[in-house]
Picture 1 (cartoon, rainbow, N blue to C red):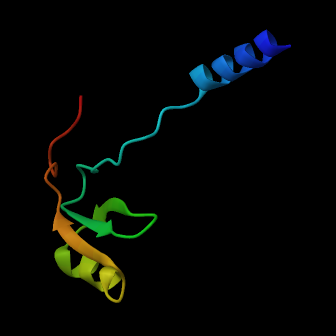
Picture 2: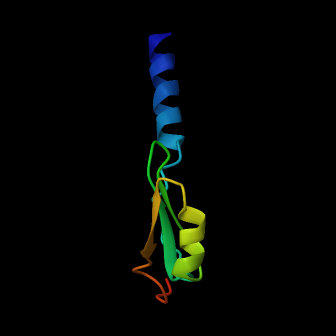
Length: 73
């Protein structure tokens, strides 16, 4: 019984999906970086003003996308 339990735990551990890293979308020049327990980076803004309007009143800041214009191959 113990060997079966260990086998099941090992199989489930090996099949678990790896955590996804936060990615900068190279299609947008401005990113919103949110802070807190569910902090994230969302690159979906065409201008700094657009991002700042969304960040207003939140625990967040707008940053320039360091990967803007660079295409992954």
